[in-house]
Length: 172
Ligand code: DAT
Image (cartoon, rainbow, N blue to C red):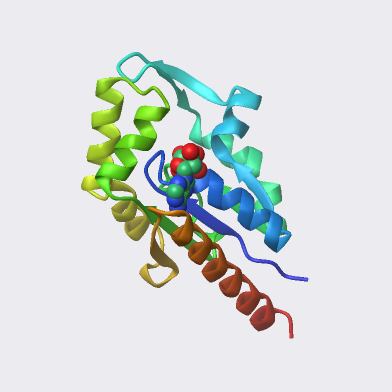
């Protein structure tokens, strides 16, 4: 059976992991957190002293995921999307969160002032939405508001419906 690959992207803290895992458990698709994959395989090619974090080796990450993506039925979670092959994804969902709500979530994570400011700016300037619109066909990119548990539930149901329709359309 053919199954779609779905990308969940957006600024850190918008709810990608929460949504991605729940979606996987309800749809039966496989959940992949790119940050975890990189950590487990040490897929880095440097260290960014300004942001105090390792730099992702994008080529190695793509190589690592290629086989699973080719199989289909994968939900990918990452706060970036311009280095994945465009052909991988059948739908791209960009989660969006209001600044005040996002600020509180990131503060809870213990982010320092700079990291907080950078991430809030990233959301204000809709960096991930623009990146998604530039990297994929516009008609497969969709923004979803992710401020409340009610919206989380709505988003999960909306994506589940989309998956169901895709499976119907591609498995005659
Ligand atoms: P991300 O994976 O984008 O970094 P997350 O899934 O870890 O984000 O969520 C960050 C925090 O916000 C976490 O405590 C769960 C909470 N959260 C996520 N989506 C939410 C929503 N729609 N409404 C309320 N809280 C949410």
